[in-house]
Structure formats: C-alpha cells, structure tokens
Length: 138
Image (cartoon, rainbow, N blue to C red):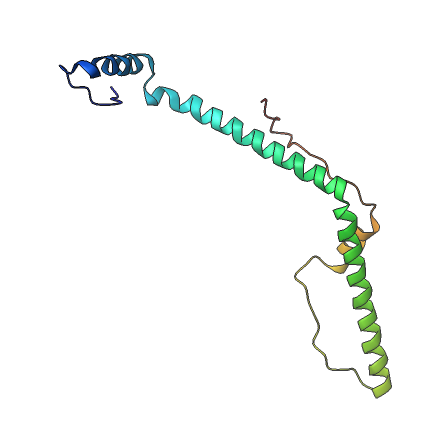
C-alpha cells in the first residue's frame, strides 16, 4: 500500500490529514493498475501534438510559398553551375586543352532526379496517414 505522508497517531491536528490520506490511498488504484491506461493516454496526447505540429507545418508551407522559393533557388543554382561549366569549356577551347579544375560534387540525388523534380509543378504538401495506421481519435 502506498503512503502519501506519515501520520502519527495521537496528534490531534494531524488526524484530519491522516484520515484524508487514508481515504486517498483507499480510493486510488495501485500504480501497476494505472500504468497501461496512463501509457495509452500519453501516447494519444503525443499523437495529437504530433498531428497538430504536422498540420501547422503544412499550413505554413502552403501560405508562405516556401516550396516555390526553394524550387527557384535550385533553378538558380543549376543556371549558375551551367554558366560556370560553359565558361570552363570556353577557356579550355582557348588554351587548347582541358582546364585542370576540381569538380564540386554534392552528395545529393543525381542531376536526372533534380531535373525531374524541377520539371514537376509545385504543389502544396498534404497530410498523409499510413495505411496501416489510423488517425488518432482525440
């Protein structure tokens, strides 16, 4: 049995407190009986908070135009890279041999994937639930 406080018998001003503590101990279930429902409640709260966070992110991205800005940045980077490649080719032709310059390699997907991504229309994100999971009921 749990003890919320120590009660000494014989002290008059503590007798009400001791009775209240004893009543609480009698009414409250043992911790091992509340662990599963408590875990389920915490899980549901976490799912609700995660869902709200995802919804806020989707709303922010939709309203801010961040995807279009990101797409525009990638297009500028690709244009800059192509311009530099053309300048290097031009200088290689002028001097009659390939220029010895290091390449810049990004550990990103191949250019074909970026080209395909940039060719697609920009769509706002949406929330998608996995088929095997259900939306939490809050």
